[in-house]
Length: 327
Image (spheres, rainbow, N blue to C red):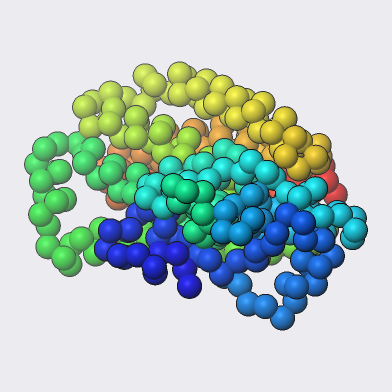
């Protein structure tokens, strides 16, 4: 049973407990690696990407399936686990929890109570859902930055038919982009099968590029709403995008090498972050400006369209770079 189901669901919405599940592999520190892997066969889990290592009911560490597969058959789980993984309390806000996992480079995040007892694990797909949900909420907040107060008031009070008319076409564009994204990832299936570790970083590269683009887009739309032309902020934003991309690349490279020990993957991630974040800044400036020049409200269209374009570019940049470097 998921941890969220053991408490009052109404009070857990938006928290780490709402996304945690106890249906994950659990092992003891003294268990043998070969025995743990054998015990996974025939079992059903909500996620098997990470094994929770517990002493009784208390969390002792986490170990990924990749590290178990790479370990000697006679090794113990304690020898290959991360003894100091990131953990969060059940009441931690979901966005803070997702960022804790992302910054530590873990594919899953353990939830423990105040006494250190293991409550459950937030699997990678749920972490991705949280990041995308929070990102969509950030984009939705752009709805207040319109050209005039009357336009903002009209957008807030307009009838259902107009609301749907303004939003659904762009969301359909987003749906088409999602289908295209899936196709692009499928085109690199061989590379991902040869090096599974590459798949771990797809969400991180896509999300960080989107986050950088969202920051730029917010500034541009705000500026347009008060009469500041894009040209006045273009150079500084482009330089900021390059600087942010460089900084993220420099930080990610040693962290990836340290945590996963693969310099080729680390180099691919670093270069992809630099390129994707830099290009996201450009996309986030150009689209609102185009919508404004065409006399359309940049709020409704530029956000979803920018997200689609940035996601597609990020996937292509990362997987192309990874294919060239890792092979």
